[in-house]
Length: 304
Image (cartoon, rainbow, N blue to C red; front, side, top):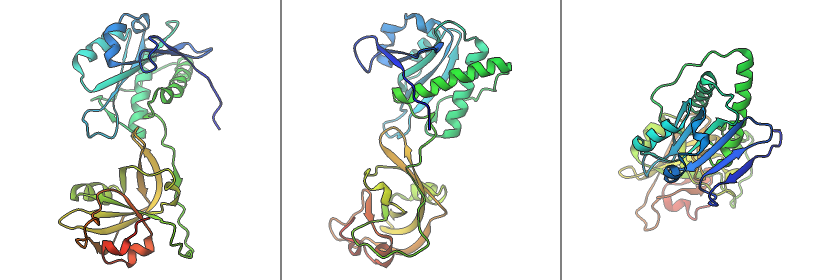
């Protein structure tokens, strides 16, 4: 169990989504959170003149489900942020961490930049805009201890400002498929059916043994033990099923990714029977036994 902690947020303009300054008792750091649109008005704030690290956050396209982040550092971060304001279009907000008492030196902030990039790459909950991965700077044991402590405080604050890409994904439900056959309950579904075009089916469902960006109802998650795929035209059929090992958050918009316990298995195709209203354009819920016995989509109605 994590230790409880508290932070203090100063809402500088009275706008809860505007420029905010974050600190903690007995912490030498300070967090600066701001929307891109506020930058011209706040660029002169003294905090941006201090050494620190920063994360630019946004979406590269309207279709993106995952944040793109760019992580940087500077002896004084104002000039770097000014350059990114002029030259990087993707970001809509940013968060920076500086030393409140100027105790961070160049080696410290380079290590913090390295640690953030390395963690983001390992956790893989975002796209990373940095072209290069920096090498880990060499710090003395004492400096490494102090900087690791600063980094821990940073990781505590980031989720509270809406950035979870550095958090280890919390498994929503682990695999819980019993080897003992259960008595069928016709009122409870255990399978989610997702639509897929051919490219996504081959590249993700079959090759990566997962499916992502699925919006699941909170009350349905605990029931899901299997995932089946409906392939769009010209196949127009449910063709494969996989056992779900775990379900994790995906992106920042309430969607999930389902990780399979092994490769998906092809089943007897359950075909679209041209009945109006039977098209599968969004997710549907059913039971595995019902799916394996079906020949057409009509056999699966009503959905769970």
